[in-house]
Image (cartoon, rainbow, N blue to C red; front, side, top):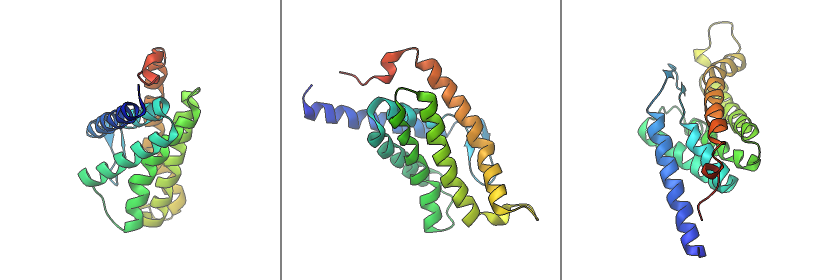
Amino acid sequence: MNKQNANTAVMVETAVLVGAALVLSWIRLIRLPQGGSIGVDMLPIFLLAFRRGWKVGVIGGALFGLLKLITDPFLVHPIQVLLDYPIPFAVLGLAGLFRKDILTGVAVGTVLRYIVHTISGVVFFAEYAPEGTPALLYSLLYNGSYLLPEAVLVGAILYLLRMRRDIFEPGQ
C-alpha cells in the first residue's frame, strides 16, 4: 500500500470510528443530571488509539468531543467547553501509548479524562455540590460515578475483543 492509500485508510478508519463513537454516545445505560453518562462511546476511540497509535487517537478523540459539543451541548463558559468536550476525549487517545497492554491504556486514558472533567466540575459546577460538600470532593465523586463503571465496561469489552488480534491491527 502506498503512502497516499495508507493516509486515506487512516482518515476513513478515523471517520468511521469517530462516527461509531457518536452513535454509541446516544445509547446510554445511565444519564446523570449535570452531564456524563454510562455507555460505551469511549470504545471506538480506544480502538482507534490501539490500532493507529496515540497521535491518531488524540485527533479522533478531539473530533469526537467536538461532535458531542455540536450534537449535545451544555455550555457555561468557553473554557468549560474545552474542558468538557475536545480535551477529555482527546486524552483518551493517549491510550495508544499502551498498545501492548490495553487495560493499562484504558485506565490511563480514563484517568486523564477524569482529571479534566474534575477540573471543569470544580471550576464551573461547584454550585451543584450539596451544602457543606467541598467542590473538589463533589466533582471527584460525581465524575467517578460514571467514568469508573464506563471504564470497566469498555475495558472488559476490549479485553474480550483482544482475543481477536486482527481487530487491533491496522489493515494492510
